[in-house]
Image 1 (cartoon, rainbow over the protein chains, first blue to last red):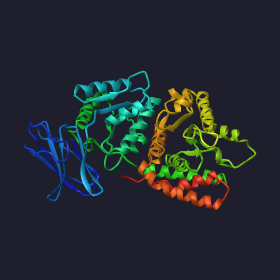
Image 2 (spheres, helix red, strand yellow; image 1 turned 90 degrees about the vertical axis):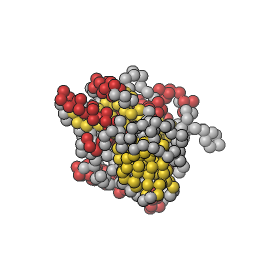
Image 3 (cartoon, chains in turn cyan, purple; image 1 turned 90 degrees about the horizontal axis):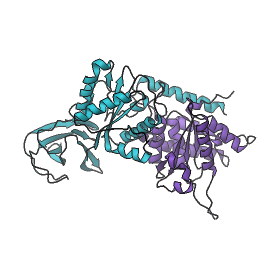
Image 4 (cartoon, one colour; image 1 turned 180 degrees about the vertical axis):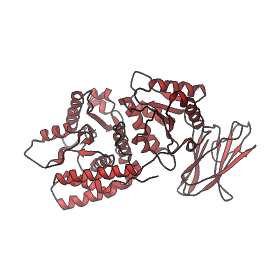
Amino acid sequence: MDVSNSTGESTDYRVLGAGSRPPQSNGTGGDAAEGPSIQGSVKPQDFDVVIPPPGDAWVVEFYLGDEILARQVVDSPKASVDLVDEDGEYRVRMFIPTIDAFITNSIGEQKRAKDLEEALRRHGVSTWLDTRRRRLSKIELMKVVQDARNFVVLLGPKIGVAEKQRDEWAFALEAVWQDANKRFIPILLEGAKVPAFIRSAASEERPIVPLRIDDPARDWDGAVASLIRILRSEEDPREAGEPVGITEEDRRRQREWLSYLHELAESFR
Amino acid sequence: MPRKHDPERSVFINCPYDPDFAPIFDAIVFATVCSGFVPRSALESGTVAEPRMDRIVRTLFESCYSIHDLSRSQGEGPDNLARFNMPLELGIAMARRYMTKGRKSQHDWLLFVPSGHRYLKFVSDLAGFDPMPHDGTIETVVPNVIAWLSSRRTEDPEAVPLPKPREVLKALPAFQARLHELGDDWGNVRVPWNEVWEAAKENVPKLRPL
């Protein structure tokens, strides 16, 4: 379960096991919980990955000092629970994805994408991989993207892309920009690099950490196991490696681009 | 000697240019520059010696990408006539796509239509081409443009990560204010297109390391 804090203040949280009792409320006034609990604190615009205590349902409570800011009954370990401040009123926004992993791949990696999908499904991870011949309409694709929480992008060393993938990536990028609960997880095969469009989605709130498979025969199983833990919210993606983001080289290229535009404008005077 | 345009960085903008649509037009132009592309338009050449259609075709053919908006293709005015310039230029872009099919520089276009499926009634041949519906706000158009352009350069190792839409939307009013100033400076004459590029360039949000 992801516990995130979209407010401007650090808050403490507590996840209480509700035993086997089903939750009787979906709002903030959940029942008093029983059983073991997990406590922690989460900084502004940050998140924690929490493995909830045993049971079928939990109550997540956010605190500031002794004051309870908001609470939420949760009945899915893959839920993302986010404390938000709306005009001075705290509330919890919860998201339970229909699709744990929307899989998309560069050209030439279809077989590995299918292998990955099978492996994830064997472990109870819900997936979506477009293997249809018919191209989805933009509206249909947008709907699938909205239902997904993670966008697993399988990239080979040569990033050839078909139009279908371009649409998938454009919509996924928009979805990640709009919803801090969604994230990209790039899988880099045989030295592939993280393309700029994925780095465009990186933020402090949702760092992007690629999983690297330099030698598929050696690294595949380990990377898939790590991916499954991340998708099940059992592992913090930040533990899987170094996050990617804007580099000095990117800033230099942006300056070059702006200077090119200036020269272009000057030459038309 | 004018610096040459790079077609792979050129985006032909085929959108209404009237006061009501101006905020969206400006947002598309600014989002294009923020995405690392040069917005191109039939407005960019001030020469009257070149016929308008020649200018349009030349500029469009010099661009690998184009963005079209059919929001104004509906009856208006006392005669309830629709404007046909935009569908005409879309048709040229579609022809260009067929002409360049299979090439690295194959033309690609993004088509905005008003939300709903009204467009199918007036141009049913577009049904299979899957336009992008928008609700007429800059908040939906800006992310659409940035994400679409970003996903066109996925193979380019020189591509730069883009500013996030919220940063672009935050910087947009300063760009619009600059355009307004330029409009005052130029009076009744349309602001030269290279001044529009400069105004956009001055306001592009700088990339910041995380």
